[in-house]
Length: 285
Length: 231
Ligand SMILES: Nc1ncnc2c1ncn2[C@@H]1O[C@H](COP(=O)(O)OP(=O)(O)OP(=O)(O)O)[C@@H](O)[C@H]1O
Ligand SMILES: [Mg+2]
Image (cartoon, rainbow over all chains, first blue to last red; front, side):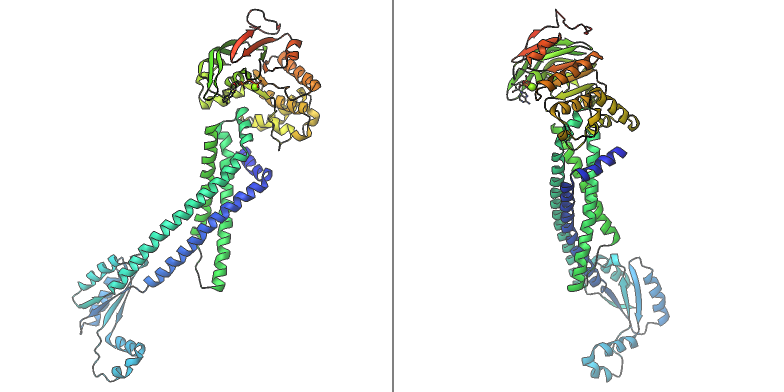
């Protein structure tokens, strides 16, 4: 094991230029993937901010006793999908209308009787803000005897759904394309490292090295290069993020898990890329 | 030790490189492989160390059935052999002792004994003083000695040498040849491909001659000239 590590590290010393080139190539390939990831992360963030506004409003029949509503609120908040249920009394509804609908202030002032119904405003938990769940919860709310009508902006929720699906599909396709390109570029780089050492590999085989023995330092070295490349890529992405934040708009960065995923991705490509290259090389000689 | 029985070797493009070659080299023997360029000398050696598959016939080397050897067993076979080439095949970015140690490390030998064994073979080939030199800092003859040291460090039963003196001047040739004779005298069989007929005449060793892939002369069969050989 120590020998494998030594041989792997010696590569960096013996071929510093090619090693640096490999790491740089891997870093920039992953950087492109990372930039795309940043776009995806921010798009998702924006969508979830929009989705926060998804709300179901249940209008109550006039004269529903407060106690009934308070108990119902408890029941509704116990729904697995529900984040919060807020009781808006008739008076509050009117006060809100006065505050928000400035243009109609006069009309609203002159009313003798409050025409606005009391309502329950129900917000859903993050994973449930889509058309199916909203419909489902709305149906259940309709089941309460004191509920007159349930509204939730069906069109809007469905549009949001479609937008989310589109974003996911585009993200998947473009992300996969970038990832494949990164894999190809990185694979080529690693192949160069293998070819550069083909003489050494031939001599190793001549003196009786097993395929596994020959392969191991390459795998380790590939994984190290991939990891370094991944780290540099995350660093570059962070620099890009800082610039965007300063000059363009407020953006989000990767979570720690997402950043680790990029590094892990680089490490894996390095590892399996080397494995494939060395394997192919060994099979041919 | 090394036994060819009715061996044929065909290459896809150039056709038959060996035609019905049979010979037996005993333990501790010294044998020359001679013949014109393209006669098939290197091919015989490459079959011995399983670099090329045998087309038909039987090749047995130190207990291995080489004609049917599996990829997994090839390293085991090669650890019993020492192999030396005309072009030395040293690693340019490693000093002499690293080049020799390499052959031991590759076999998974324990690190503790490596340095001592490397020094011993380097001394044996007369290069102890240049252990720290890179190949480019060594003369051709010295580089070949490093290559021989590398071949010896695993204590092979056979040393295969493909025109080991092909790139050397007369003096270095004599030195390297003497080294091979010494190695043979200490019990290691040596198979040496060469077209240096002066060398062949100098020593009372077995001669196997090939011509266009066919064995045309084998001095060892009925008139062994080598006293050290034990058939
Ligand atoms: N890898 C190969 N592919 C195709 N043909 C080959 C290959 N290796 C050798 N040959 C052919 O086999 C024949 C014997 O070649 P070999 O190298 O054994 O000759 P040799 O006796 O070692 O010659 P030299 O003295 O020039 O080294 C030649 O005709 C050569 O063209
Ligand atoms: Mg030859």
